[in-house]
Length: 458
Image (cartoon, rainbow, N blue to C red; front, side, top):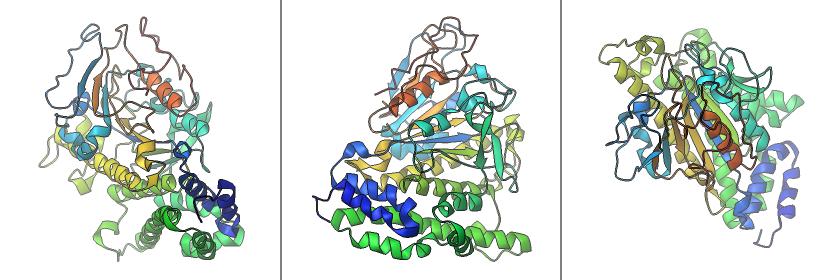
């Protein structure tokens, strides 16, 4: 293929048999890349939602003090650059991406107040205990910027045998969107769906999508040369990684039944970290291959679901240290920091994977934003007068997130902003402008709850 190849000619390759659905988005991106069309790069949004609250202190960079409490404690936006500052120990794994971060404090979400999780209200900005009242922001973004799958929700539940979590995501009123908490089923649901009938049965038996599609993939790859072939190979590498992971997941399922693990120590049992790491890898592959542009990754959450992390030296559930209880060798605060560090390592690895894939004039990470928050806002028993958020990436320049800490005016201050304003900002950034999201907070008499957070919109 030479540089004169048109998009139409490239996309003709997507008519290949069993691989058609899978190869179409890949070859579309190859065509855009060959034509130098940076505008065709897909905007991608990833939500990472961890249970048990995020302390506002964890988003404070070095040398910055928490504002005093009270209505007029800080009635103006406070901003500092991260360049010469150190991230809190809880966020330390994100240091390599400090120049892509926006650490955001002071946004509120009290409309979703509950004793623990805000449930659908965390991403929906409505009361926590009334079920799915409207689409949550992950589903709203997915509908506005769809891939083959409009949105993908993956997670890790408190118990290994819990397959689905219906408490955090919603496609619309009364339409809870399940978070798939079983990595094996998540893999088959995403990557088995490109086959059908006997083909799907064969895939389920062999769990090897690349072998199943080998002839089609080789034919498509054979008509690409140079940069186009190199880019196509980047996409296929993601499937290679998933194939290796799937082999281990399938092996784990058999070993669990027999209670006689034969795998290496890391994958010999369904530990919390193994399940969550698998879901992050599946999410990365779904993004890289173009199956979806919007992903929700959850770690516990909904109701009172607080996983333990024995692999991190925390053998008790998060409810224990959420109430100030320590474990041998760790105070309750050290437990919070250790668990957050682990999640930040996963986020950093995801960012690294996206950064390794060329897209448009840059990399896939350049066209992505990762939104890291908790389903219970600021704490185990939240107040939600502020809801700390970490943003990594600027969504192709649509967001202003380059090395910033922003503390917005306090709850009830006239210039205060809410999570609903943040979600409107994300919708504007993907080309679906809206100035209202969720249900207004009746406790805010002066603050403007409509519109975007202008300080974050590029």
